[in-house]
Image 1 (cartoon, rainbow, N blue to C red):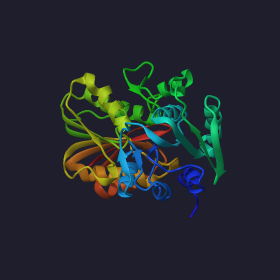
Image 2 (spheres, rainbow, N blue to C red):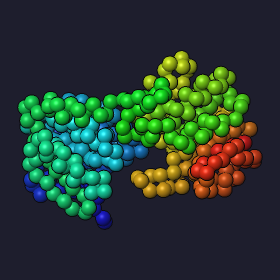
Image 3 (cartoon, rainbow, N blue to C red):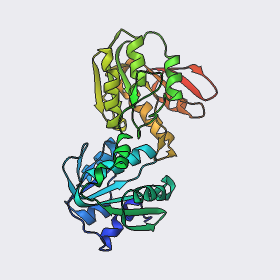
Length: 336
């Protein structure tokens, strides 16, 4: 079996260089290697619902918000630069004095760059490299967590405004520092008459939902479904000024959202998973939307022009039309 970043982050413990005790895992997924190394001495923080459920199913204690202090911290690098620096600083602060922070990531996400940056503000105790990944570790001193550089990195994870809009987002979530062009094209192309019970699948930080609430006063119920809790929490903050009643569901849409509940489903379905195109993911969103609609209900979705979603829609919808298209996107309307 090919080795992963989780096999590599476990190496210092497997080789006896570090002791596995009272540890947390930040932004990681389930791994047999970590389970075998730490047993019941590991608690994971995870806000992405599918990974949260995999950790729980694997017998790992999991939470959406770590508290307390720990002897060992495990931090897995993501593809997002600012999120990584914020996570490193937060992980360092979660350590008890003398605790050890172990960080690992793929070379492709710049693990060597983070190793160098951390080493410039705190002495590293060790490093290893294997399977196109790097792992490095350091020990927390008594006062270093309050140094200016750690505080600067920690602030990178705070909500930040998107210029020219009333919205705030944060690093690490989809389209965190701009309005996604596909979502903007969807908003610009929405049909008249959206009303009743409405679901927003893959709602992100709330841009589409905010537009719906602003333009359609006959929406009786609006439910947001989003797998990333960080994004959903931001959506709740971004929509609070509307004063409208909104349902917020931290949910893996692939598991379904119910049957025959909604008059409209609006979505910009994802079609990437772990950095690779995955058309089946978007197809699943459309299938779930069809199940969730009442008879005569309508789906409005945006997609890249090359994606073959019409084939899926024809299996569940009787009337399909293109509301708008440009060089990059198409907006489809389908009636169940």
